[in-house]
Image 1 (tube, one colour):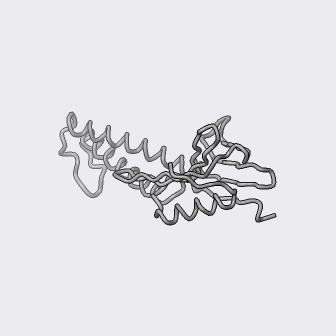
Image 2: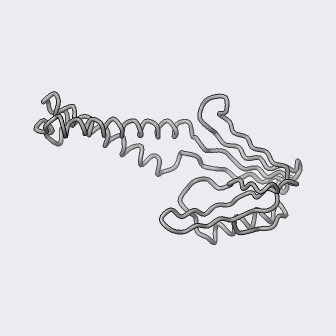
Length: 181
């Protein structure tokens, strides 16, 4: 029975890069906000510098703006990490002849995202590789109605050989052809 069901885990927003950016945006935003407030109140709120000498109207105001913006983005990133947005799994079930794609979304009525496709509606497994400034390497579920459903999570690009091997294993498991998009 285990040879008939395959489940691939998907890591959501709980990855190192999100922790890194949340931490540094929070620290940087707090520092900028305290520097701007120090220039307004003329009281040093930072132990490692003396921003009381800044003129409030151009510099202090901009520091408060950037600090608030950075804190807001860091709080948003921390909330997505806590809620684990984007995590889930892809299940390929030969017994039920279904492919299930399950992901966690934002709170609300659509918190749990479930996409189900019968195996008879799947044409092939597709690979899309783009190079350049923003390289992407993704595996897609190609449906007969010409839709392409991404199966790989948003992440650092994996090596081409690993991507091809993963796609070939999946195509072999589902008895589908492999195509380049």
